Length: 238
Image 1 (cartoon, helix red, strand yellow):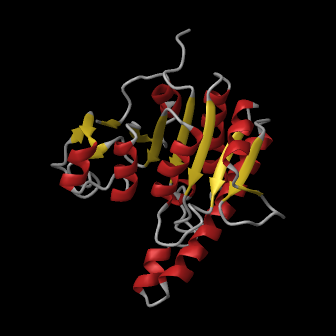
Image 2: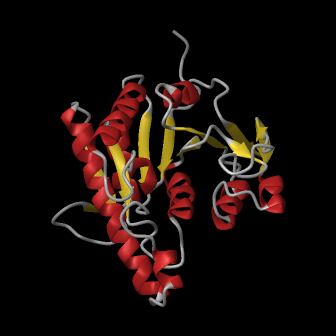
């Protein structure tokens, strides 16, 4: 059997990935399916860390648009990511994958505070690590948190799981003429304003030559195929 193309990865999941057919909250069936996908690559010996969003529960920017203070709204969004991280931890541990939730906002009763060397040690000990609460600072997205954590733990790649099978010239759900990129550069993503990750995250990845694979997490087996180096979704690189 061929070896995985990546040995240590950051999987970036939006909060909406846990929605399933629901319009709010967490669908246990979807959470279980994602946990099984993660377990399959973990069994290959790949070190897996996850950054998860909170948009299925609370979206800071939407609240800001309705008049809430941006800092307050962003902190509320960070708390939503912790709820999602605990749900994913539970789903993983039910299938015997040892998992640690690590938060950028300290809340010792439910999770560990983020300490870079300790997080790396968890990965070396074959534990899945779920990073919650973004960067711990308002005005930064969980995309930026994924890029930052990837640098800190020296990940080989960011795998961004979405609802679509890659990066398109426009939203493929709205524009039937949209075409998919197999590969695209960081500069092209920024110049074309493509909604892959926010500009801060893309710039951070570009500065550190960290590749990003954007793929459909809802398609069973896609995560494993991406980690094995197969052509799944779209690749962002220099």
